[in-house]
Amino acid sequence: MPESEPNTDPSGENHESADKASPKAGSSRSQNPGAGCLIMIVALASLSFLVGFGIWSLFKQHREITKFTDSSPRELLLPDLESNAPAVIELNAKLETFRTETGNGREATLKLNPEEINLAFAAFEAFEELRGTFSVKQISKEDVHIDISFKMRGAPTKADDFRYLNGTMVASPELTGGEIIFVVKEIIVPDKTVPEGFVGVFSPYRPAQVYLENEILGPWMKKLTSLTLEEGFVTLAITPSEIPPAAEPPEIEFNHILRASILFGAVLLGFIATIIIAVKRGRARK
Image: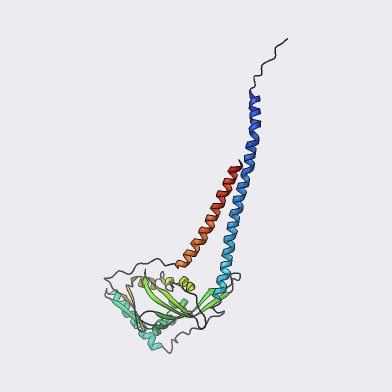
């Protein structure tokens, strides 16, 4: 009788061992997607929270702004150029003297009162953007009182809705980086209260920023070495022996940074903690 041929294929044991091992591998693979789905759900929930919180903040901000703003601007009258013709001639003479002294390398000063500043806004086309929104009311040794009518964004859902901040800004002018900025101390609106947080966000106010690249005004502002206040006057000076003050980074209200940091940290820690728990549970099921 012929002898039975030996089984030369050792794959039988391998198939058997593979069959025994396959349920574990399959079960581990089937468990991993659950942890991944949980992480995805948490991520989407965190994103939804942030988006929702951002939308809620916009509407809350709008409600607060409507408490001290108006639906229409107030009229800030400009000086009449015809009736103030002699004053315009005198203002031009001051500017020409300032320009000549600087060109000759000598110390030059330009001393202006509120009427002359407002007259410059009315007379020179370069200041067209400030007309009707910015009018110097009073100058003291400490600060400048400015009548304002600022256009602001209204309801978040209406692109053509605007509010107007009509009041008086009390600010301290400073010279930095070739630019005149205003550190806002207070915004006075009759019969209304402007929150300190809004004033902090509004400062520094930079009306001269648009003139930094102006061919005429830009180079002159960058040459200014000092800005001083006295009762009824502001004086701009260019001293050849002095270096113009360098630009300083704008300060941000600390309360806003703190609130934003706490919120972001809480969301981030919650997200990380959820991922760690999900990963540990996935490993425990293996």
